[in-house]
Amino acid sequence: MTPGRTRAWGVVLATGTAITYGLIRYFAPPAPEEVSLTSARQDNEIRQVEMRVYDTLGKPNLVLVSPRITSPRRSDEYLIATPLFDVVSAAGARWKGQSRIGRLDVGKNRLWLEDKVRLDGLQPPRDPLVVTSERMEFRMDERLALSDEAAEIRSPGRQVNGTGLRVDLKNDRFALKTVEGVYASKPRP
Image (tube, rainbow, N blue to C red; front, side, top):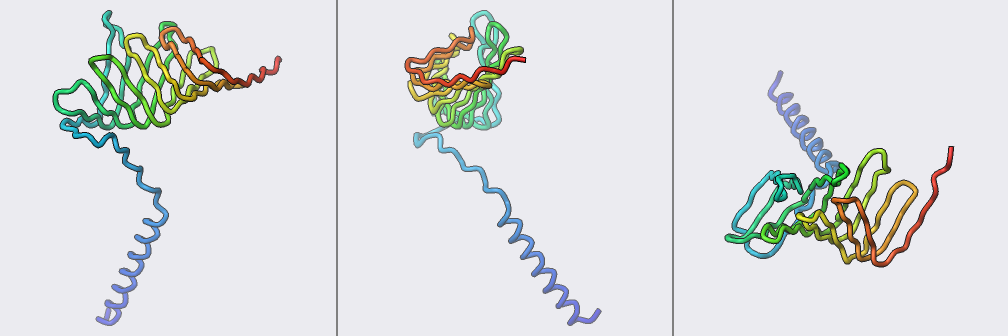
């Protein structure tokens, strides 16, 4: 191969590489946005956390998973990025929860969830249930979820909206202070 052809092929390969890289960058999905947990100083950081919280009898109250937990020095409060948690009721129903931001106060056994809070409940043979709100407080000892924000409870054929949510995850009971609902009965066979 002559030096002229070598340079020509080099230019073609470099151009092809640049175009390919540009197309990959253009069509790539956007990077996930980083959630700002707080503007306060955070001295401690733990990555890839799986925390288990037990009651006084040694039974699990909560399993909490997060890619990142931070806290200021000498504090019982932890800021949690995208918390995922799992709770089991007395009847064996599984409750899986998630939100974008969380705050855990170990001294008070409280978990506050914010920004797209969602609880998914499943206890066969019952229909799956989804509870959503923007903010929710979870009392770990009592397995109680509370919210003064607007909330929605959905299951197949049913939808209830309201405020003043109280979900007893231990006994699978729900209460809303104000209620607006839609119920579509299932067709009988």
